[in-house]
Image (cartoon, rainbow, N blue to C red; front, side, top):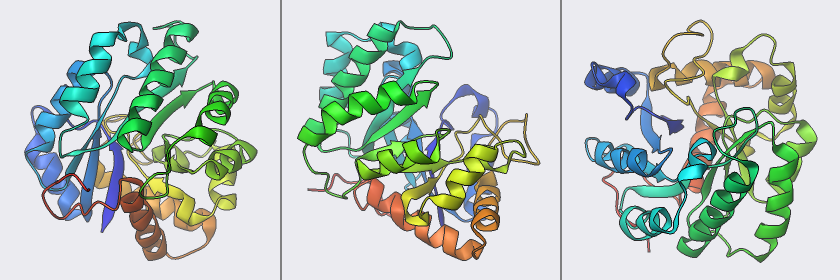
Length: 272
């Protein structure tokens, strides 16, 4: 069985065939899917959608693209209304994105730091979005995590859609993070990512689709979906020259640990 640690299947892209997409995922061996929010309203939709299947879990938070919307009221709603929900297993996706200018760097820093604090207080891992900002996010983490509360599962969070260097990956791992590996690993020109996959220990990776985005070869450019996740496992197995079953088993165990030893096969209940 396999776990998709990062998916936006609650979005409008799946309104017309949600049930069929879920059925294909189950037929492909996907036992769990983490639905990830990008702002307050989107996070509420995540929690609503998570109720329709026992294998769904929720990740709630404010994406750096939406950091300009961050406020005391948004913080309160996340903390008091959403993070306490039984299906919620992490805070995200949070982080920094310098590729687009939807929010200033200052707004992104503030939203990231406050959500790191919320997650730490709730003993929840974080799902981190980072684009063209790896050194800045490492600097923030170097200051924050030495003083943070230990996590129940031993994993601080996941660097979603990882595109940094091997050296940066090693530093994130030393801080307690794992790397989210998705469809980009199948892209022919993603040579630096291929080297990361070769060099990083398998138990420091988890699988993700980022659906509807980042569809793997041969579906690149089309809508992504969780049933394509085995293609990512195939590519990791090829790059590391190990059996696919080993990739699936190890990354699934790491995903469960990331989300607090959650059992995706049963209905969600908050762990004590």
